Image (tube, rainbow, N blue to C red):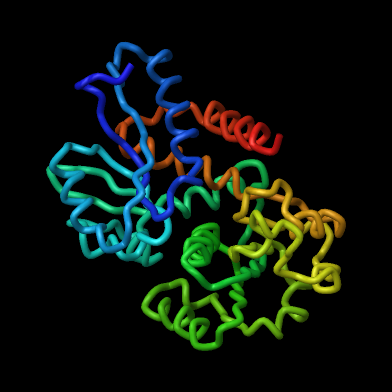
Length: 298
C-alpha cells in the first residue's frame, strides 16, 4: 500500500525499462514488511529513465522530494560522480558509482559491484586465491570492479585482455597509483592463447553473448578448449542462462557462474546501506529473479 509516508528508492539509467532491480528490490521490501513489521518499513523501488542531459536536474529533484537512495546503471555510473558530495574509496578506486544514498542531506556514492562479484567466490567456491591467476575479458567499467574484486581476494596475477590498444593502455595506467598495479597486466586479444591455459578464473565482462545475440561468445571453441579442467568460468551476463561462453566452458570441465548472483549480491549490499540494517532476504531476491527470468522465457 503506497501512501504519503512511503519512502522512495529507485534505479536511474537510460534506458532503464529492462532493469530487473525493481523486481528484486520490491520483493525484498515486501518480505521485510511482513518479517519485521515493528520496524515500520515502508519503501517502494521505482525505475527512473533519465537522459544524460537531465542527470544534474534529476539528482537535484531527488533531493527535493526526499529520495532515500538509488541504484545507478548505464550510462550514468561515471557521469554522476561530480554531482555527489562524497564518494567512498572503493568507488573512487573503480572510477564508477552504482549506489547512491542520502546521508546528512548530502548524496554519498559507493560501488557494490565488487561485493556482488566476489560473493560467490567467497562462499560457494571459496579457496586460497593467493597462488591463482585471473584472466579478465574486456576492459570497460565492469572490468574495473572485477579487477578490484580479484585484488581483494588476493589473486597472484590478474590479466586483462582487450581489443582496443589505446583503451587497454589507459586502463592499465589508471591503476598506477594503487597497489593493484603490482599484479595487474594488460594484454591485446591476440595474446589470449597463452593466457587461457594459466587461468584459474576466467571472467567475461564484455556484452558478447547477451540477449538478443545469444549465439555469440567472446571466445572460439578452440580458444576455450585450453581452459584448465576445474577452472571457474564467470560470465557477468545473466540472460540467456547459460550463455554460450559458459556452455563452452562447462564442456571443458569448468565450473560455471553466471551474472545473476552478482546482480543479487550487489543489490543486497545496496539495500543494507539504504535501510541501515543487516537483515536482508537474499533468498527471496534470488528466487524472485529466477522465477521472473523463467517466466519471461515462456
